Image (cartoon, rainbow, N blue to C red; front, side, top):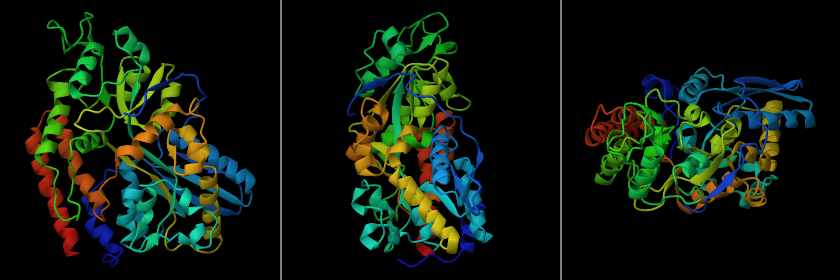
Length: 450
């Protein structure tokens, strides 16, 4: 596959679109006081070494604090290197990174997802890191990285970056609220009907009525049974459970408005507008509600672990709720990258950072993410890393990645506004996905002609 047109193609074709949106195997509980939780800081200077590395990532959640603690240890062991870690919200990370490439001034190191490798590698912007691995003369053990994420580092004959983790969507519950509702918090419901039934029992109005009671007041809810924190992950996870896709396997045809996807979206909208077990998405702080003990179940990601610990609430980690016909979950992986133009002492330093972080990937498990290194992942103590092991198994068993397309960022940007409109009850499920399908097809047609 030839490299796409030019660096300025980003500015003309991608940045011009505006701010871009980035993007059941067991049930076990964890104590809320398992470990202290550090506080994430948007920008942190680490070390005082003369070789200074500028790192950008989108780890603005509680997982970013885990990375900073790892990098703090690295600079202690490597005092000639210093690092500034700038954590940028994913909604602006990609536009800022693309603008930096256009300006010819990218960061020395950055972390994004394996699904974005085709976007940047197709433009010749990423450094091929094959030489870091033992199958190309390096030290990193190539066979120790978990598929299917590991294979996604390959693009057009190159291997781009060092895989940090597998991460994706999952379910977290407050066991005490489930028990209070007469439900067994060790038993995950596995059908849409059972999920709705349980969530109705967990949704309580100001008069103490639950959502299954004819006298329930949906306008005065004091405890919600369920809320997702990211519509994109939520919809696509359940979409895969119903056999849906966003684009065809050959990357040429938009498929997001398929009948199974319309059925999926309608079933998710019904949780709010028919069964009243989930609040309207816009303006609702699902993390804050969970921390306040006012939300019994949250669909969020592996990255929620440190936040869950900090709430003081009891919690348990489950794989994603199975609302569709078969198990399925959207997952991705963080990948450490360096720009194609990096050279000299800075490249030597970045190579050393990425190698060190990968060799200490077990420390990254404290973030809740699943280490990419198989040996380190399998050596985790399940009693201490319950969420990593329980949720992590679901990615290997039935995980689905984002569309691996050079247009992946544009595709997400085209999909998300209509998902938001549907979850605000401003569009029907069919109309929302028809609109999204039209825009995605235009993107694929443009990509095919570039």
